[in-house]
Structure formats: structure tokens, C-alpha cells
Length: 216
Length: 314
Image (cartoon, each protein chain N blue to C red):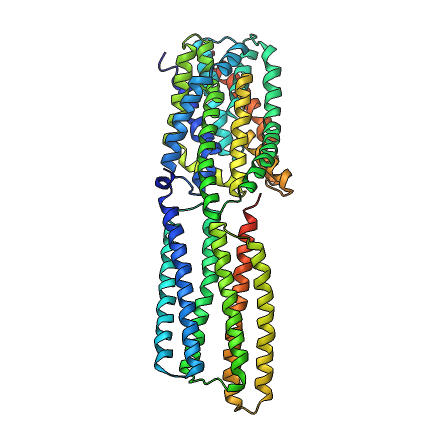
């Protein structure tokens, strides 16, 4: 019976889940594109998955705009409106980073040197784990199916680990005899990959605050 | 007689336009509920409240002094003028204080004041903000524990708060009708021109008309200005106002919903250790509290004296 009174709220809720699923699909395609890049840079697979990453990132933007429009047409209480919009804005930084990283590789024709591949792979894997945990945390906020606070600590630990790997990669890179121009390009790529876990950590802390605000 | 009632109906209309914001102001100004939904709900519950529980307040005010129809009209007009002036000055209004002040003015000037019920009325005025604060503190703790235990998701919490604000707003409107209808029509019962039932019906309808026709600007501005707290605290403030005013309805004394609301906001501030009402607002409340009955009393004396002046040609 209550669904009738909360039609707009239900629509916002389902759009938020659709948005989170789209971010997940952007992440899947980013991982596939990155894997293809490491195996065989500039191959057809890389461009295919980059295209799909871009497509899902755009779709996520469209969904976010729809949520925004719906919420400002008086769905949800103002406090929740502000919190959700702020949260979606910060989550959106993550798929944007995926797209940016892939375009750096494509436009600068980057090839990751063999001695950096294991560390870069670990950095990407850990960063994407942070994103998975961030998604779980967002679902926990909207479904209350697990503890938000526990997830904050795990993401925080992962993020610190990512920072250490990032510094290690940059040190290795500048200790090597790679062309200085390429060094700068690879450093930029590493910093951008490191940003993924930083953004996930920011989102995670924001979710925690939103959750704490709701306690009396 | 119907023309004489216009003064009372005008007072009821202005009361509805002003005081409905205390019940639905937060929900409407924050766009949680549409104005028309709030206005219709408010109007229905005000009429229900006045019909079902408005009798006690009418009996108390009627007991203060027995009026002729002329005096009843003068006291209504004096109270309405005071309410209008205080609104223009931006001071928190208590229609109840205005009406009692006006009745006292007439009683004083005609030397027919029955002050036996006055003590109870003044004690209740003092007790209204205090009661609002205590009730808000109690409800905040009680409902806060329940709310935390429910461990709701963001959407569940949103729905619960929205529904609760609508229900507590309707309850606040019911309490407003039950308590404040006496301000509008008690003097006409005292003058013998209305029965208690017709007084509750006409009074309730005039307050409802005020809500339906002119409460929007007050709901959208005053409601937002008065309560700058989180949604849960806003719910507690409205609920505390409803319960406090309802308790005074059982005692039979018309009190101010604005004072109960300000008391509730202060109570929330005490519980949370934050400042919810600024010093300037507190000063305004104290000034308004003291000025309203005095001004209404002065207006009713002036109007009474003026209406009894006769031109004597030389």
C-alpha cells in the first residue's frame, strides 16, 4: 500500500541500484581493457573494451542526471536528497578515472615495461578491490545488509597499501634507465591508477558519515 | 448577529493562516509534502479537534467574564488587531494571549472581571514552552532509542520520517483546533449568541478556512525559519507541540502552538548540546510574550471607550 505513496522514492531507489550496476560494468570493462593492454598493447580487444568502458561511463552519467532531476522534483526529504547527490557525485569520480586511465594509454601509445608489470597489476587489483568494497558499502547504506563501519576500515587499509605500491613503482621507474620522457608518462599513469583507491576511500568515508548522521 | 460574528471569524481565519505552520511548516517548507495536501489535512483535523475537544477551552474563557454581543465583537477585533500588529513586527504570536488580554481589558473597563480563572491561564502560558521543551526531550530520548534499534536503510528511514511528519502534523492540527477554537468563538458563547456546539463548528471552520486560503506563505517561510534542525528533530518538535497543546486542551486552557514549538526546539537543543534557537529569537519571544496580552488589553479598552463616545451638540 505504501508503494503508492512513495512512487518517486521507489524510482530513485531503483535508479540508484541501476547506477551502481553500471559503475560495476564500467569497472569490469576497465579491467578487461587493462588486461588486454598488458598482454598486447594497442590490440583490437583493448579498443573494444575501452569503447565499452566509455559507453558505461556515459550511461552512468545519464542515470545520475535522471536521479538528480527526480530528486529535485520533491522526492525524498531534503537531507537525504543532498546526501545522495553528494554521494553520487563522488562515486562518479571512479568511472571517470577508469576512462581517463585508458585514454592515457591509448592517446600516449603507452607500453608498460616488463619490470613494472607485476607491481602495476597488484596496484590495479588492489584499487579495484577498494572499488568493490565501496560498492558493497553503498549497497549496505541503501539495503542495510552489512556493517558500513567494518568496510571503512578494510578500504582504508587497502588504500594505504595502494599508496605504498604507488611509491614503490615510481621509485623503481626513476631508478631505471627508461627514457626520461617515458618515465614522466608512466609516472602520470601510476598516479592516476593510485587515485582510484583514494577516490574509493573518499566515497567510503562519505558513506560512513551519511550513515552516522542518521543515528539519533 | 451574523455580521457581529465576522470579528470572530476574522480572528479564526488569521489564527489558521498563522498557526498551521507550527504543525505542517517543516514538512511543507522542506517540500516533504505538498502545500495542498498539508492544507487539506490541516483543515480536516482542525475541525475534528475543535468539534471533539474544543468545549473545555470555551468553558474556561467563558468563565472569565460574561459578555454582551458588542463586547464580544470588541474583544475579537482587539485580539485580531494585536495578532496582525505582532505579525507585522515579526514577533512570535500567541492568539490565546491576545484573546485573554482583550477579554481582561473589557472586564477591567466594565468592572466585571472574574479573575478566579486567570491564575490557571497565566500558569499555563508559562508552562507551555517549558512543557514543550520537556516533552521534546522525553520524546527525543524515547523515539531515538526505538529509531536506532530499527537500523533502517536510508530509504526506509526517509519513508518513516516522511510518514511520521505527516501523521504528527495532522495530530498537531487536531490539537490546534481542540485548543485554540476557544480563542475564536468563546466570547460569542459568553454573549449568548452561539451554543457551544455551533461555536466549536464555526470556530473550527474559520481556522480551517485560514489554513486553506492563506497559510501557504507562513508555512513556506516561518516554518523553515523557526525550525532549523534535522528531520528527526523536526518530527519530535511537531509531536511535542501536539502533545503539549493537547494536554492543555484537557486542562481547558487555550495556549500558544508557537510557544510550544519554540519550547520543543529549545528542548532538542538541550538534548543535543547545540544551539537551536538564537538569542535574538529568544529575546523576541520574551518581548512578544509580555507585549501581546498588554497590547490586546489596551486595544480592547480603547475600542470600548471609543465605541461609547457620543457626540453632544452645544
